Length: 116
Image (cartoon, rainbow, N blue to C red; front, side):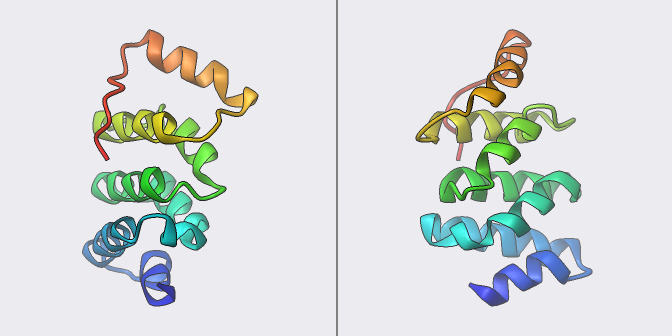
C-alpha cells in the first residue's frame, strides 16, 4: 500500500495517480492509512482523479473522510458531489461542523444514492 500511496501523492502522470486511487479504493478499509494522500487528491487533482479519490475515501472511511466529504459536496464535478454524499451515507457519524454543508448540498438536490 505504501507504493500506491507514494504514486498517488508524487507521480507526475494523472493516469498513474487515478489508477493508484482506484487501487486504494479496492483495498477498502485497509486503505485508511492513505487518507491524507487521498484527501489531497480529492481536493486538487483533475476531475477523474478527484472522483477516484473520493470513491476510495468513501470506501476506506479514514479519519480525513469527513473533511473530504464536506469539501466534495462543493466540487464542480457532479459525480464527485454524488460520491461525497455516498461517503456521508456510509460514515459512522457526521460531525456537527459538517451539518451546514450537508443541508446546503441536499437543498440543492445532490443525489444521495450509494454509488461507491
